[in-house]
Image 1 (cartoon, one colour):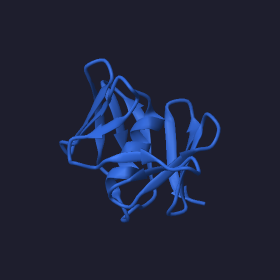
Image 2 (tube, helix red, strand yellow):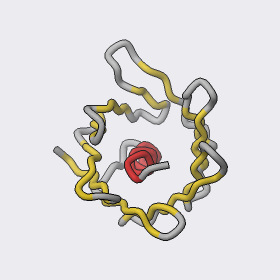
Image 3 (cartoon, one colour):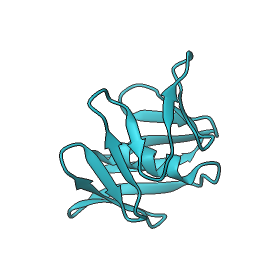
Image 4 (cartoon, one colour):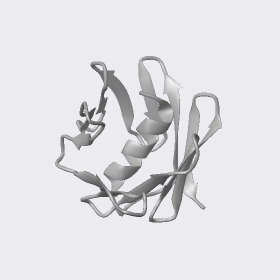
Length: 115
């Protein structure tokens, strides 16, 4: 689990109601300015403070405990069943179809904002 992954999963969970926020590494996990915290649950899973668990399958698929499903489209966007879509741009940035971008701003700190 890294802080950028947590920010992306938190943004996906917001669905179409995405707002700017920041996340940073803290003792035992990651805390975000909009109130969500995330903690490692086993080797590959993340449990968020709102109760949503995000698991990575052995094939690399993302499994959300709240029923959100994901698939890769032909243009390289990961499409989520709640209407959110995201794609990786380089190693330190994710762009959402809503115009929001999550990127590292410092070591252990990520900002998600409209770009």
